[in-house]
Length: 414
Length: 142
Image (cartoon, rainbow over all chains, first blue to last red; front, side, top):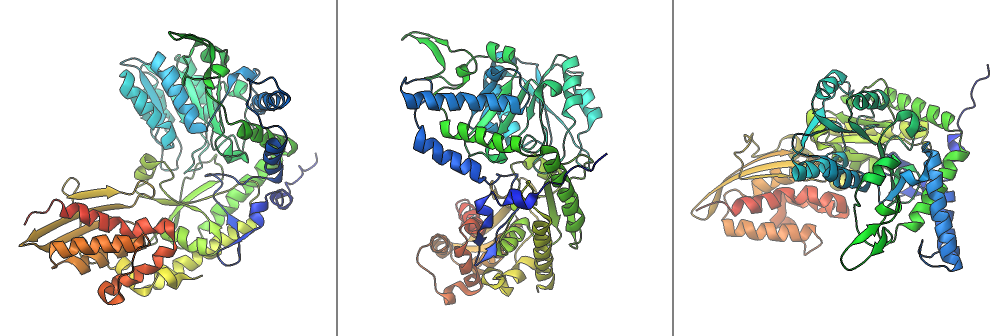
């Protein structure tokens, strides 16, 4: 058996022009905030310029040449997205502004049509606000109840508690595939199987997982999958809702307007076929085509090797970070991705982020849009370093060296 | 690193040894505010008599800048007429937003916070306590 080829992170990194720049008086940029948004490679940047220089037009309307080109590329991006996540039918791909809008679409459309007083929606205590607030809104509107699966001190879901919750009248389970704070990769396949045995549907928030792990929605058997383009090299403002076609067929429209109709009179309207029924108004055409271009980059990569690189780098980061005296990593799940959140005794995350920024290092500080999770950890804010395939050990070494200086600075203070 | 620009000795001193801080039980603060973007949390109680701010207690879970600003503010305002305090709040906040600069004589320790203006994302850390005090003064009697 031959050893698998290593991933050439340096060569990959060279395709991201922004990573070559210096910040804060000549410090090379060390970008460790990819869980917030990834940088964009030359392929996607060129694609955006090409789109606006060669084919900019509105889609599904005009019959002129540019409209034809734009429509073809727009719909081709849908085919690429479907193939990327293993969806057999491109009609199951709805373009949204991002993960947040995709979840809100399900909550407002499926939720309002299907939830009634007494029904329960189960989320988890490690959700991003975007997978909490939409359910609170629809629960308030329908009289349904919201329950949550707690997590253990290691940052893993309490599956015994999940089993108990599933004995109730659960209509939907909405959970993250990978926590943006703890890095935990949740066992969505077994959760989906268990939920389906009781007749509940499952929405998976794939914002953090889709950029890293090959996803097969048929094998996973999720009913809904939401994710964002900008966390996977594509422009901001484009996201995806995957849903089983039969569900989309039965769901009422989310937003009304142009594009989503079949026939409109002044009294009433009928809806376009799926997925167009859910794409009211002029869509983010450039962003969608940019997402298709990002997927081309993924498909040209050795994704298994890239994933091994990210896993090895995550392990290296966790090993090195604890060299900083008083540093605690939050999230010790056995199965995890490259978002590493931590706190340092005596130094507030804001101050940490400010100090390392002076060294050209970008990390996130705050509640990471997961206030209930942060509260459970007994903190008000955390610092997070998050990785993508373009990061290397040198980035981690720079962070650790900077953190050691921060800690020394605050320790010697009066 | 240009640490000294903003993390001056005096700021670290107030961060590690904040003045006029105390625990305020839940539900017993006149002002209880959280900065939704960063999670900084501040509670204040104030009391006045004869138009003078007599007492101010702050509980703050925040960064060095937020904590030091709260502590220095408390030292500055206790014992001063409420009207003067309101005027100082308005002028301090305006300065932090790019308005006219207050003299170092008037600011005292607070002058150390001037450097924060170079970092737009940190200005809120600096002004949170001041907005909190303003809200508390709206509730004090006497």
